[in-house]
Amino acid sequence: MNLTLLLKSAGGEPPTEGLYPIAIASSAVHSVFMNSGFSEENTIKHLPMKKVVGIIGMALLLLVSCKNEIEEIENLTRADELPDISGENVETVYIDSSVIRLKITAPKLVRFTRVPEPYYEFPEGIHVYQYDHQKNVIAEVSSRYAHYNEAKRLWTLRKNVIAKNLQKNEQLATEELFWDEIKGIIYTEKFVAITNPNGVFYGEKGFEADQQMEHWKLKGSKGTLTIKEKE
Image (cartoon, rainbow, N blue to C red; front, side):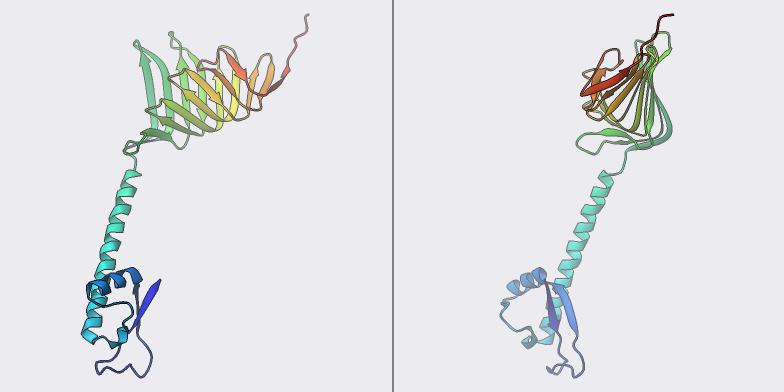
């Protein structure tokens, strides 16, 4: 709600042509009037000109002060939303017992730590390679978006997610996939398709597997088996 003050000329009479409205926040005016010994029932136009100008000035100062505080809060909020680390064409390796077990490559990486749950984000996608002890690639995972929660050690992959077990010639395709490092499982509640030498299998309600995809189970499953004829 806005309050309009009608200023009079120095002689005490309203201007002959036109009005000069000044709109200020009603809450600020109310505060000034209460502290000045006036009630809202008094008619502003009967105040002396100097008093009216003084009230307007005080109200404007209050508004400017509030605006500056709001801008400071907004700036702090924006600072929290900025990443602490960012990089392009990133390559990261995970080493276990002096052996490279995983390699992650991404066009872009950003890290946020000034949030309740720090995380890494890969806004342009990710590619993960898993190695055996002989440094052979045994599995690959790729997606067009990825998110990693550091505290929960939980990966979230979205958009055209493809996971391959190269040892078993098996491929999984879905639009969302979770990888829980603590539990050592990968899973999804989205539709999933798994292709292997035995056929194509579908999970209408998702699937769950160990992180090597050695053993998996479909939810709401159906599929087509490929039967090889004996020669």
